[in-house]
Amino acid sequence: MDKSITVGIIGMGDMGRMYARRLSQAGWKICACDLPAKYETLKRDFENEKGITVLPNGHLVSRVSDWIIYSVEAELIERVVAEYGPSTKVGAIVGGQTSCKAPELAAFEKYLPPDVEIVSCHSLHGPAVDPKGQPLVIIQHRASQQSVDLVVKILSCLQSKVVFLSGERHDRITADTQAVTHAAFLSMGSAWAANNQFPWEINRYVGGIENVKINIMMRIYSNKWHVYAGLAILNPAAKQQIRQYATSVTELYKLMLGGHRQELTDRIKTAGAAVFKQDAQDQGLLLSEETLDRFSLSKGPKERMRNNHLSLLAIVDTWWKLGIVPYDHMICSTPLFRIWLGVTEALFRNDALIDEVIDTAIEDNTFRSDDLEFTFAARAWSDCVSFGDFEAYRDRFEKFQKYFAPRFPEAVKLGSDMIKTIVEQTKS
Image (cartoon, rainbow, N blue to C red; front, side, top):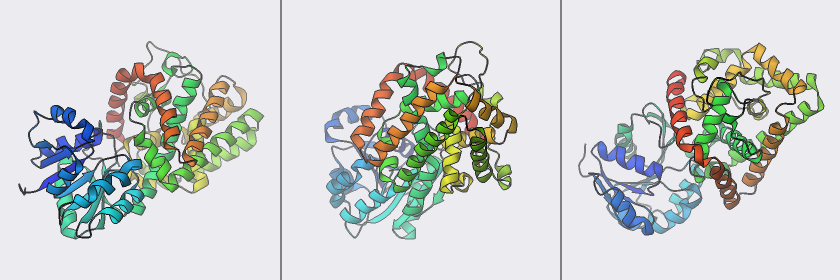
């Protein structure tokens, strides 16, 4: 290891802190900062951690660091790079951790000196997930192979699965593997809150698939809003997919309300056949109810109720309408995407279960009010994203976050256990 190399981290949110600790534990020198107003607090937080030096601002980090990671919100990346980019050390390498690379790389091109190289990255998982074996995208944007090799060497301590992509390809894949998944869970939480429901306390939401819905919804709402807003609003492909998801939810719900059994059946099975082709049978993602049953927030035994699984049907309908083949991007998939795909696959490859879903959709009104609120929620999130309104996104997110917050500690622990168990089974 080259002891003279210093890694700078600008932005010490959850991911910035995870990177700082992991890299310093591997022996790299870390210089880090956050907002100047947070300097004293950040310094206290890391005063007993060797290898991490906290500095007052990004100018000081940029002047001394050989590779600088901007770990800030996608919405703010241009503003932060504009402020600190000109102070970058001559010959340094700069990268970012945002989930949408187009605005990040544009900011680097605009504000970094020409003698600075650009090698960006993106860990495709949350800060609480063990990075070992998880996808880590490296983007060689404006850099020599020697600089890329140094970045890979620095990040090798994460033991992640490195994938080399262009910024444009990264954004397309992240949209395909995250946008609709996030929209589904955000809409679930919105619908349950609108109905004043804690779903684990209701007999309707029992069983393995319901556990996944509840646990991942809670995990998403326990995170910071900007983790999802940047990808949704700044990535054009994500906007299109979220809009289609809202359309699919609405159209499927109208077929259910109208009792159009044959049209609903044809649409569901056509979508399923297009997405879950025979040649994808060996993907090994199929998740069993027995595995998923172990991870429930509900207390005491309850009997599973039939559900039309509108959220799952709309996911597959969206993929079909947009020509997305989810298996194409498994090497860059997040843990949540692999779980959601595995659950969806389990539904669509079980003929008896998919027939039960269709019967329930046409004949059973048990979930009608829930589905109505879910449809409203999917459309509201889509509108928010289409308008590009970060403040509206934040207001909606934090409103529902506050509703579920009392149960976050228990839910996040259970959700982490579920993800750890299932990811081990679904690693490609």
